Image 1 (cartoon, rainbow, N blue to C red):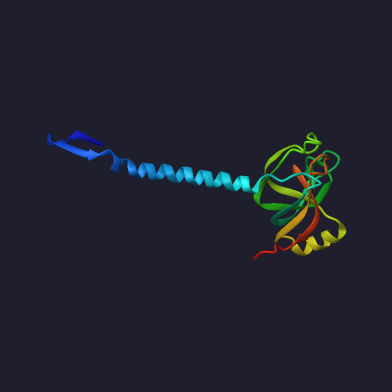
Image 2: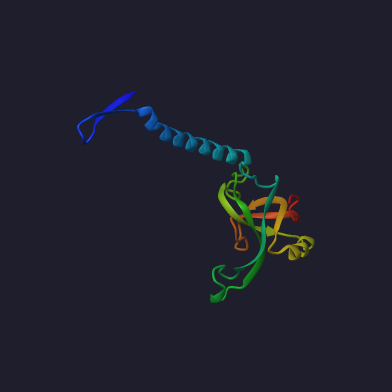
Length: 165
C-alpha cells in the first residue's frame, strides 16, 4: 500500500507502508516468540510437590543464624539464636498445594531459599560443602513452627557436589 505526503518544497512523495512496518513487525514477532519460550520453559520445569514426592534441588549451601525462642523475632532483643543450613537456589521454584493437607502445605511461588533438615551424617558432609554449589534430594514440607525459617523446608536424603560440571 502506498501513501502520499507533501514535502516542504511542495512536491508529492510516495512511500510504501510495508517497508516502514517491517521493523515493527519483526520486533513484535520476536517479543511473542520469546514470551512463548519463557512460558514453555516454566511449564516444562513445573512446580515441585510436597512429601512423599522426592525432589532434587541445586544451589549454594549456606549456614544462617535466625532468631529463636522465646519470640523468634530479634536476637538483639533477647531471643536465642538458631543456626541452620539453607540452600540458596540456583533458580526460584514453586510448590503445588498438597490436596491432602492444604493448611500445612500450601502452594508457594518464587521460593529462592529452602531451609534444610539434615541428619548427623549429612550435617558433617555439609560442613565440607559450606559456601559451595551443591545438589540435594529429599522431601518438602511447609513451615509450621517458629523453628522453620523459610516457607518450605527440605528433609535431606542426599547432599553432594553437583553431578554435572
